[in-house]
Image 1: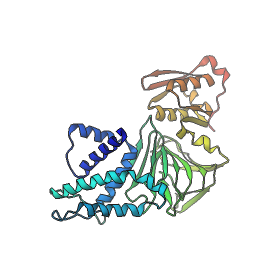
Image 2: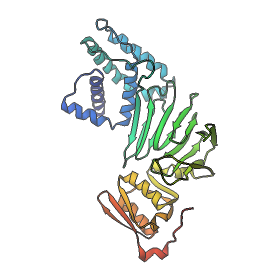
Image 3: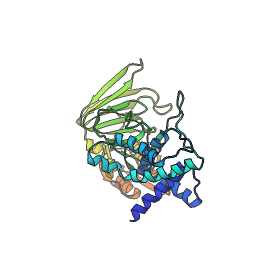
Length: 363
């Protein structure tokens, strides 16, 4: 009953926002808190999209029931016929009906819900989902595909997703479990696009990394990128394969300069995607690369005392425990000493145990 009331409260606030009604201070705080609820934001974006597609009605000719039926028919047209899919989307139909009534009242009192501008240059409404530093999130897209978004990552798509296209843009890292469809599912990264029909794969494209990686778990993916001549180059991946774009220049803005592409076969896809299940995994990565992962995961800043430590390399996986526990695990397997000062971590070489661990230089 409490969960039911909570949902009603969310959609009551959504109705007031859509109808242009003012929120009192308490409601405003509650609405701002809902901006962090990724699942609600997806549902709200769907409802808002269909309402905004309605043509404006004359104030004196309001038929709330008919207006809602118009929206209902459009939504039903997009819902797969199987009962499982209907169960996934049905809960917010009832709450959207509340909005139908409230928006109808808003029309009657002299307010009109405006449609998106038409013609060249019209603004496109974007849905943006973010996982800030120190957190991860799992979302269900409008086409019922599932995405795990890693810390310090951002996913965006337009209002036509699942209707006219299945295109998204990714900044950071995400694992995709894509529902099969005749409509291609396309993930755009700053370097290349990943196109699939139905599959599971991982993409890592952080601005502060020197590489962009796509790993295929099952199915098949098509990597498409533009060459320097403007031609489209294609790389096909099979399960347990990954493509890595290595940056070969050391300066300049993120994702600029030259990149070298390699395809690795027979990789451990489970290790590559273990982060979504609460594991911190590394495969031959330097401490500098590992430090970047820790910064995103724990929302901290790591400084090195000296460059030697940056080249130590690690392979393995560890449960994502507290920051101190992870650092203690590092100190047990390598000559690393650390200090923690609130959100600042300093790493230095433990001279007393250096001889027990051999430093491997970057290739």
